[in-house]
Length: 170
Image (tube, rainbow, N blue to C red; front, side, top):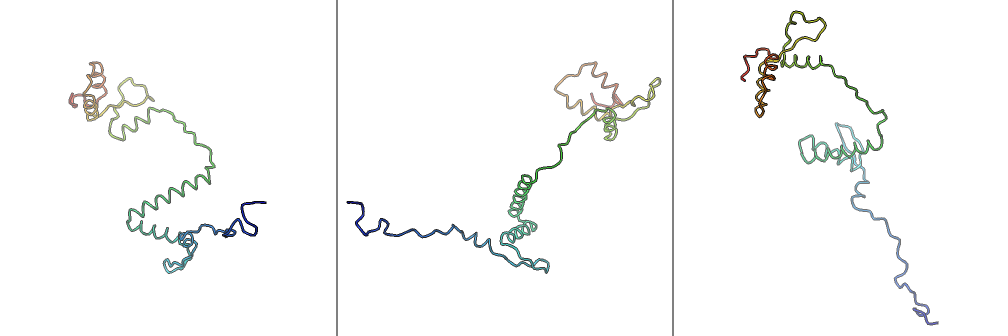
């Protein structure tokens, strides 16, 4: 039989390939090491990775912007990991709101935008108090509405709702 190789000659002169070792980088070897670190007089054993993180944290506290940026990235990465690992166990919060005009009145009074007036004669008890706007608020509102003209009826409403209607510059 006429084959590719002569009798007694191997088809693989270099022999069987040697078993390959897994690719191990120098960083992998270094990160597997343990270091003894002294903090406040107490010795602790840390991995190189933990020691580098600690050193970066200390540099960030001393004002290094690059270290602070690195720490913030580490925190964000950890928060993402924690959120994926531990989804929230509580039910979604349902927000219900109600509108109560008196709450807005209290805010206007608190901020000094309006002033409570004595109730006119014949005003029913238990009704909301009468509020009038401070002149400076009216001036500011008029200043902001320069682009449009205000109708006479609206001007009468503004004067009736203003504490001292003669004070604002119209």
